[in-house]
Length: 139
Image 1 (spheres, rainbow, N blue to C red):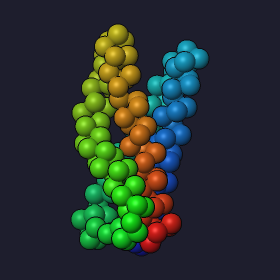
Image 2: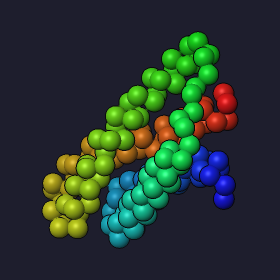
Image 3: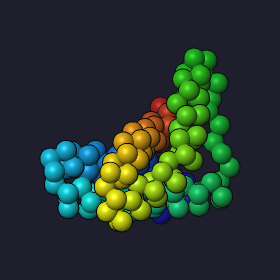
């Protein structure tokens, strides 16, 4: 795969992570604990692959600038800035959520997971949206 296609791969990984996250959420609501565990481990693995691919790409290619399209550019930045901040914030939260689950500290796991899930979901969904805006809709 050419390096220039990594943004598409990254968007696909984000979309898959989103699917796994929401499937894991549904599984735990239905009390399917083993399925929930497997889906969340899958989301973690896919998100880790995304992060490695994203960093590799950005070490080899300059950052792509969003075109000056007036209010659309403003909307892009309103999505991008919280995405970046939350992407940094979510990393330790994800690790803490997983550590508490593997220690079977369920009460504390639930507390942090209630914060981690929406942040991780936002970052995954907006990652796809940012890709679409930057590489497909307004290249």
